[in-house]
Image (cartoon, rainbow, N blue to C red; front, side, top):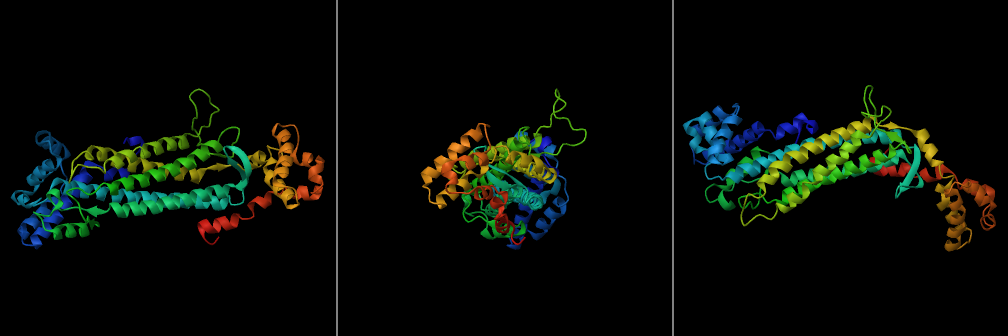
Length: 435
């Protein structure tokens, strides 16, 4: 992660001070339960909280100790003993490093998920507002990048709203799946620590006990989490790519807001480039890059190894921070998106009426012409229009095969844009509910 793409609240989740604070709370809660079970003195558990509750852990000192011990949890525990004093000997009773590391990682991931879910809520609000604004703004729909049939810009945004709603649901599921706690000791058998300690710590930290931790929390949970992030990132890219295409000079149906004083090019003063949505495309790639390593982390050796550790130290912060930034940026893009209905109308007219070809095809078949003959009749009139040689309706009115079945008035009625948007309200009710 780099500061350029970091927002404060998400970045703080991954700061060393936050991590050590979570480690302390895991250890202190565990010691509390051990005191309740009569395994450690209650006064010792109280002293640990008294000394550690408001402590600011010395990150440089922990790093200094780790340089000797080559073990991050031991370095932390050593530093904690410097803060707490003799009572620190009762910390980490029967626990192993993975109990602390895995439980902490899952807390960080759940906190990150909470921020990401809130981000999506803000994006959904922006999408809904702009979709309602442009519910009836007719524009051309494209398939393969080629003009197909009319739709509305509101329908485009409603599609994105529905997609991000599904993404939100996946994030909620991923959060629930990763919100587990492991305080089970070496190889996860609870040989040296009572299972009630795990239950107690889980309850205190808003987690649930991992059914079988094998010393580490199974990484299928984390693979699902990072996959959920990647799907949201892909949805971001889909919408960003749509905006990038719509901003092309030849299209210019929508455009990123261009602020006063903003510069588009160091060389060409006229440029207004889709830099925000291009940036979102790149950030989506970064978030997706975590998926394969997360999947490969699932297959650890026997009860545990640490091949996943270095991976997660990278993908945990990077994926959540990048996605948090991307969602916020996309919300801003949608909020301020410049929409040009007059250019949408111009593009609707570009092909001289060809966007109504299917209506002609269907009308001819309904009048008795075979589908094959109908297709040939429509296509032979469409191709000159495609080449810019004529107007589609004019050619159809001169085609004897067509006019034998359809009057001029009937042909003209088949060029009505409103025909294509008559079910927009139905789509909106499906997406947004009552409108």
